[in-house]
Amino acid sequence: MKKEEIMKILPHRDPILLVDRVVEKGEDYIVAEREIKDSDPVFKGHFPNYPIYPGVYILEGLAQTAGILLLKGNDEIPLFLGIDNARFKGEVRPNCILRYEVKIKEVKAGIVFVDAKAYVSSKMVAKAVLLLGSKR
Image (cartoon, rainbow, N blue to C red; front, side, top):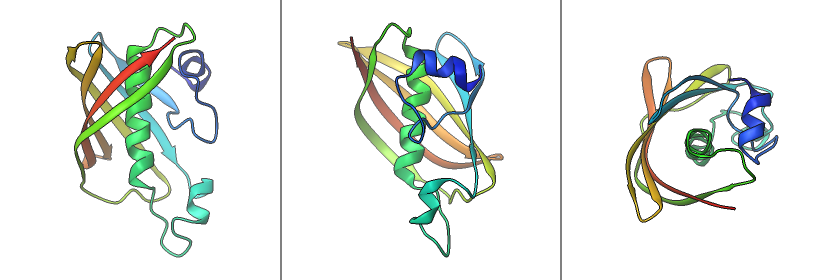
């Protein structure tokens, strides 16, 4: 799934659309990617002499990936309801591929809990349990 198809599901647009493509999708899991380029505007301020992709962007990218899995594209607005057990395990620097892996853990009272992990190459750089919902 390419960016054009992703935009049919998610309401996000550049510069905050943080998923470039979906590489695998099943009923309860999804794998997506984001190309981290040195031209990304965020690196002008975070940090000019030592660019690091912000952790909050990594978590937002994971949440957007979950949205692609969960939403049907019918004008639903994804809601990021919470973050549990977030940990950052490594830096994300320019000129790499950030891989998002999201798997549904459970659904309770309309809230979807997902295990979310981010990788650069085979190294995990972040993980969290995300709580998600949606609004029409």
